[in-house]
Image (cartoon, one colour):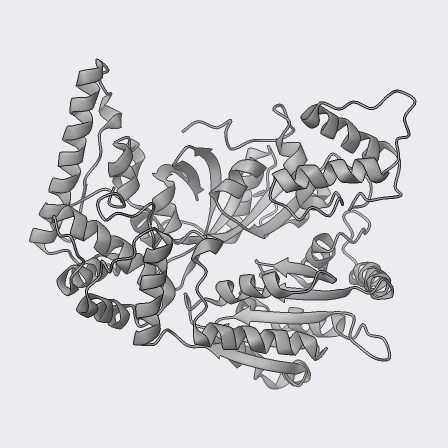
Length: 545
């Protein structure tokens, strides 16, 4: 709605993890240097802490970009796991085969140990990154410490990076975890932006979005810094809403008063009447323009296509629908309540366990019967796999499978919802017992990219598929690629994983923005399965809100 008004090509303060907007302040660069130093020294553990929204995930992404190609990385985004689930998840990330359905830590440890020794023999190193590590139980942390006991006479076979909120430091300070704490070779705590860093950050994002001239006045930037306390995520949310407010009130620059009002809105305080009326008026004008265009084209919109205004719970001041709703003038009726309101409802269940129950229900699996948190174990017993990643809407569209999204509200609480459908710029979410359809821009305010997806592998044997292998799984891979690229192999052609097949896999990975290594690992297979129109399991584009 506002980008064209301010000469921008897109929303500069979206929470979507777009690498083009990566901004590393001095403190982020120092944190990155500590992580690289800790890994380079060959120690067991490296620790990174910071308050919610300070950019821990940003540093982690920058780290992944700078790791050398001979480093294998396993990433765990959801650490509320048992010891067995965690080690199994590490094996899954590193594509280490193990007996399906096993609950034996020894079996998993042995499989992982052999794989790490093999990787070391091939000149490769292995790093395990655990996000939200403050949620790990002491028992699971102790099992992770035991994992780092896998070593040669000269170096560790596994290095671990623990990323979490300040509570992680308090957790590791416990006496019963002193053995682990003594193995931490590098520690760093991310602080929020200074005012100068905030000013540089705002300018950087506006410049990437196509505007060289300052839109925010200096007092406005100072106010944004003070009200966000220098926390990047809060800063993004306040600046985004301030741009909308300035547009709604017809101002060409964002002033301090606009930033203050925007902060009151996004931080949950009441809007002033003048602010609310002005924003609502802007939305009504847009709706009127859309209506005129509809009538001119001879197409009469349905009632459900009109933008919706919601009422502030503290009074009768109308609040404009989010930018994406006004921009498309096609908001669904379910958007009458915002996502913030839904997540703030104390009667709403949005924990990880209920999200898994809802996700498995889409696969026709009853995960609620046992009463325990189903997690990924239930899926493994049913022949399904978990894929935990950080991505964007584009990645989710390509994977085309329902997924659990981890949302974070401004108070630091985590909420887990199921993305059940994705249609254009609208996302259908299952939140507990409630299903709502919202603009993706609204979801982006709370989603920074983490997701867990369930998928059914067409491969029965171990992963990854790579050069030198043969059999039914390789034959399936060849056939699936033939469906995509139109190249069929002669009946008498060799069916092994040869150089020609490796090049075809690499070409497919290049198209899908994956590392073109020619090895058909888990994510490559997920993308291949997603290309089958009648693939097994539910899809995002097959569910219409």
